[in-house]
Length: 329
Length: 303
Image 1 (cartoon, rainbow over the protein chains, first blue to last red):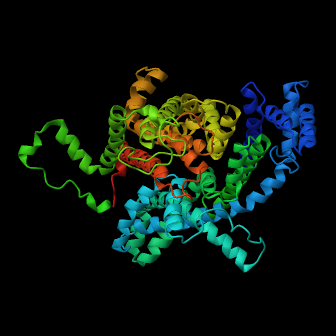
Image 2: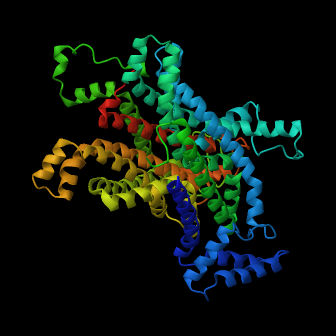
């Protein structure tokens, strides 16, 4: 477990380092340029921007050696201080990200759980000889869907369900003018808006889990202990659940930890397409406005959050598979 | 899909046995329908681009070369967009650009990945620990975000080839990992041992003994890498980090999103790029599945 934690720390350090060095590799300093351009534009944030330019120069300026700047940056990041947002000056990057995170965590958490559990269940049934015959016809569509990017599925669903038959809202996380709060109305509104983005992720991700599970089930069903269980005359449902599924599900959970990053990359685009008020849309807006501090803050936060999620999954894994412990024998 | 494939039952009539390789290929395709579907889909795409380049004036893919916002008609079969691009010309000019990004990035990725994978798995030891460590850590980080940071840093005037290089910078991680795993199992085979005992050097064994045996697998990995690279490039482009002046498929979707074409009911603007992207991904996916089946006959359906 200490090793896993070490890997997590390396990921965090890597994310910070990339954030620091990559913008500098291009030779120019995009942050400084953007700040100066903003300062020349003038406007009501003028004084604030000038203060930022000064502060920025003082903190990262060329008067200090590179390693010094780097250490400063690392210490800032370790205190989760990402500076102010350039485009929304008086607000800090942290504030803005904190607002968007619940949306993304909610959307991603639900869709990952749903697609993983439904997909695994379907995959198990697909490989079970006693499953109803019609289930076989599910395979080709699941396969085909699985090859499509999330956001493409989202665009098509949006056109069919929101634009053509106006069944669901097209855009955003809640209706314009709705009053955010813990009322039944608002929660219902939020859920309604979440259906389409969630559906476009679940429909696509489902196939991957189903296919992988089916593959594992086929292998497991050929094992000697399954033949032995059959010879003992155990009920076929018992064999299916306690012998086949129980063993086939283990690689699925490992795959889940590995897939989180990919799911997130895909979900960013789904959010953008639907204008869902999560981290993905925020990132899109930040890129549009060249808000480098915000972009760096988002990228860093997301990478760290994902690293944490992977760490937690790793910690849970021994509970599922008694053969694995992190203690040395 | 599973029940369409009946086991190769009776031997075909004697007359058909000697019809040369073409018939052989045809018969193999019937046993491996994924491969056939993948090839057919990609052929459709190649034909579209090829015939399109002969029949359509691709300079119309530039803005202001046609009246804006026309629904499909005889003159503009795919319609035109808000900036006055002829969408048929955009598709004909843009599809190869998107594929170009995918192929350059995919080839670089699999090239670097196979070198690292072979070296790592064949020599083991410290080299292996380092390469495996980097690949494992790199894979847990969401690739799109790292690519975003890179693209943002050099945003000004990106070209299609630079785009490919950006995508390639992470495209080697997955191939390295999967190829390493394959070589690990392969290196324990008896014929590798024989080659080692007969005095072949490491690189010689890698190129003459291991590589040929992994060729179909490398093919499947390449197709997969190309597909992933295209996905990543379209992702960057939709976010507005692509080559702004090039009419690639992803940039077209960026403009679709930018102008809220869906909300406004300009269905023809996004139908064409979506259909083409669907064909690209489905074609590459079925091709990978087909190649996988060649590479790993054990996969031949047990059910």
